[in-house]
Image (cartoon, rainbow, N blue to C red):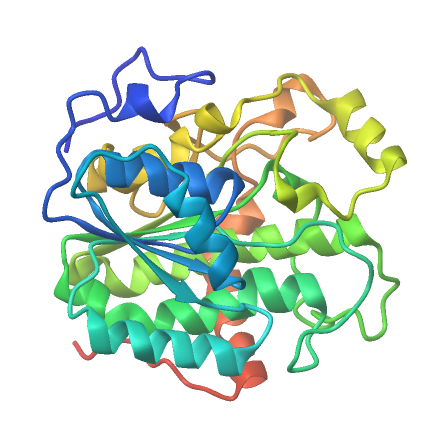
Length: 322
């Protein structure tokens, strides 16, 4: 593993990130691996020798998508069913994966939903908080033994620049009292993703598991935008600086997963294939469109969200013994 070459940046693609990289012997799990950024991540890693586990709500769709990839002979991609909006599915998937894989070197939490109408998961949680955060919270924690067995290992949480527009509400995470808007919920769930990575890294870095959160950039042609109205899409266009291809959008998570050094990405926030620091500048200005908000990496808020998440899902994940 090496530090990021200065040539890596906003338009770097997955193939450029992985140029000359041999991932033979590396096991990577990618959630949401049946389309968009997830499928490109699966393709790029498998093409360079990694054994990839791709999860999807729809196994048939995922297998069809994987079969259509142009992969070299011998490439290894396994598909597992996982619905992050159902904790029963999450727990069953984690159990199956642990039975089949003693070691996982990298887990890329790529799956998610964006700006959907108000609804609830199978367990009664607000859809975006329940899917983007709580589903991954349980799934990742249940797979920690395999990640520790693969140490030095990594967790890469996909977040969004949208986290800069909304902190989690620890008193009303499911919008039970506050007014719901699709983007407010999305922004809060993406902050939760950063906070989760912050706490995982704090808990397990001494045992060789490092965690980070990455923003892929704005990509038009992925399924995550299926709930957006034309008005919402126009608003996003009005405030964006640059749109990426899927190949460049997936590059940052691939870079953080297998190219950047663990010391570089551990506990950090990445975008455009590099680590960005804390910035609390107005997010609607050009200067405020990069960096991570301080509330998203606040250790006290990360610990508080962890405790709340355990309470909500009815499952405890205590810190490792010293």
